Image 1: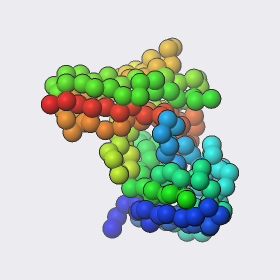
Image 2: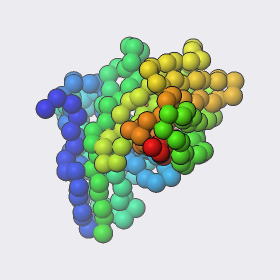
Image 3: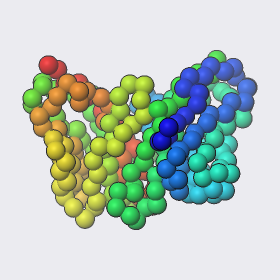
Image 4: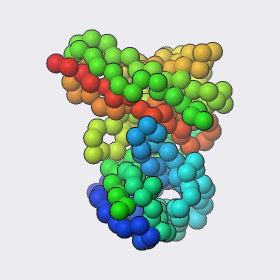
Length: 116
Length: 111
C-alpha cells in the first residue's frame, strides 16, 4: 500500500522492556519524524531524520533511539520502557523544504503504547 | 516554554455557523504555518497552510489568517459541518522541515 504505515498499532509492554515501533513510507520522502502525543502537550518531536543515516534529536529524545539505514524505514526504539513513555506515537514524512507544499508532513495512523 | 499556543482546549459551534480556531506563537523566526485536523484513532491530516509573506489563504470552506505583528493566526471554517468535529492542531516551522505544534483544540459541531 502506498503511504505511510506504522506497526504495531497497539502495544502493551512492561517497565524495563525494550520495544521497537516501526514506520515505513513509500513516497521516498527525505525527511521522517517521530512524535508523541500527550494530553495538554499536543505533538512533541522525539527524533527526526533528513536522509538515510542522518538523524537528530527533537524536543523530547531522552529514552529513545532511532536509526535509518534505508530511506523508507525509520524505527523508534525504547531501550528500557518507563511508564512516562505511555503515549500515542506518530511517525511522519515530508519532502525537502523549499519546494511548494513541502513543509507538509504526512502522518501515519499512530501506535498506542502502554507501559505497565 | 510553548512556542505555539492554542489557548482554547475546546470549542462548540452550531452546524452552519462559523468556527474560529486561534493560535498564538512566540518565535518571530517562524516563516510557515499549518493547520492539521485529527480524528480519533487516526493520524493528523494536513488541512491548510500559510507563508509568512501572506496574511490570508483560502481553500474552500477553510481560511487561515495570519497577523504577524500580533504573532497570531486563526482558522475560519464556514459553514461548519458535523464532519468537521475533530482536534485541530496549529503548527509552525522555524526553518526547513521541522514543525512545532500547539496542544490542539477540540472542535464540536452540533447538528
